[in-house]
Amino acid sequence: MNSKNNIIIIIFCLCSVVILGNWQKIYSYIKNNTKPVINENIINIDNKYKNISNITKNNNILVKTNKFLLQINPYGGTIEKVQLLDYLDKLNSKKFFTLLRKNCDFIYQIKSGIVQKNNLKKNKFFNQDFKFFSKSYNFNFKKNKNILKIPLFFIKKNILYIKIFSFTKDTYLVNISHQIFNKSKKPIRLGIFGQIDKSSYTPKKYLDHQQNNISTNMFNNVAVSTENNKFKKYKFSNILKNKKINISANSGWIAMLQQYFTSVWIIPKLPKKNTIYIKKLFTNVISIGFKSANYLILPGKKYNFSSKLWIGPKIQEKMSKIAPFLDLTIDYGFFGFLSKPLFQLLNLLFNLIGNWGFSIIIITLIIRILTYPLSKQQYIAIAKMNFLQPKIKKIKEIFGDNKEKFTKEIISLYKKENLNPLSGFIPFIIQMPIFLSLYYTLTNSVELRHASFIFWIKDLSSQDPYYILPIIMSITMLIIQKISQNSFNKDSIQEKFTYIIPIIFSLFFLWLPSGLVLYYIVNNLITILQQKWIFYTIQNKYY
Image (cartoon, rainbow, N blue to C red; front, side, top):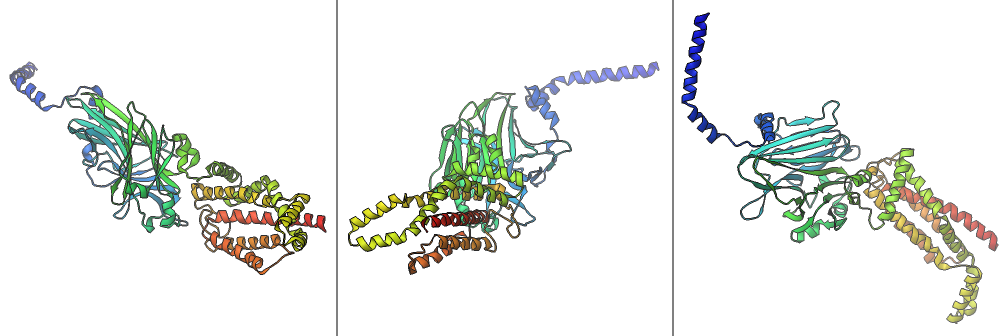
């Protein structure tokens, strides 16, 4: 036993002599080859993610939530493809709607990264020239978890950059955190940027919802909101012609708009002002984005930037809570002050009934009840004009050659009968804004996209596929024309207009949303009933 202990002691002494003899060399090697580590947090980060380079495939990183199927390119961490799981590509399609994509003929993608100021005092986008690494290339929600975090890592020149995408269940909002660790001996200046690139022209095969490029161009715009200007739109055509636009802002958002969907960068509130930019990236590619100022990061310290991104449908109720004025991306046109309450009432009725078509019918009844006093005056004026025609004709026969006397007698007759000929136009003028407001509500509310009614009407936001509703609408127009027609003074021109006007209206309504045509049919049916009743009352008065 003693001999064994003696051997161990001898070996220990020899090792000690060797180590002491080579200590200077070991110390020199550690000093010259080890990267300086000052902050304890950085040591923990290094230990936790020391195996991040195990994924070296060229695959995009795939992310699945209950709202998205999303692909992130590891080069730059660019979001290249987004499919929305709550929306179909087209009516009766089995494919999900693809909002973002990168193809040879069309680009719509979202970039983000860090910005570094070089010696020439220009901002260098520190993004596409490097590849992020991740522990996996396939992510989805774990059981009983409502938040999914996807960290991507990159190390260059003693700078550890971690970009973390955070997804929450039941929302289209994505949080992006940019964590920058300065592991060098020198201070650095870095900031962040967020950018959206989109082709100005959309090939027909990528168009949403039975659109054509004419209608698409109506909705495709860029929108900006800052503390100085709550909402401003820029047309694609103007961006392609003009030079780069720069806007200084403390906060706000920038959005790439289309009819029902949008992608939005919510600009982070930072100590220094951010710069919003809008420019032509390539011949037919529009680029919008923001970049922060550069911030000093001392050796061994870290800096965390956070930004938010909305990718998805333009849902008024949810977007208004994310950022001020973000609900303005839903373009309700000039009569937005009417369209918003109309939609809120429609939405309330839908929650009670469960059918958008019947909700439109009920809201039409409500509108006609509220506007009945004006409509009544209109129908009374039309009826009186018809029944006064014999008296007007007699005055014309007597004073036809004397225009001054004829006009005086006609005015006297109107006063006696308490008739204002212009009163018939007032209800029409008032109803036009309501009609236009409902049109913008139906064509801009994503809730009505692919919303069915009954029978063959499977999408109230698109045209009637069999043109049955426009034909019914033209018949109701013809009946109204017949009722309103002057039965005492018919002529060939008036007869022609009786048939021409319904034909013109029916042609106009062929391509309008079927929900709007449904509104007009119900509106016309109520008009027919009201006119019949009022004409009957006036007739009893005169005969």
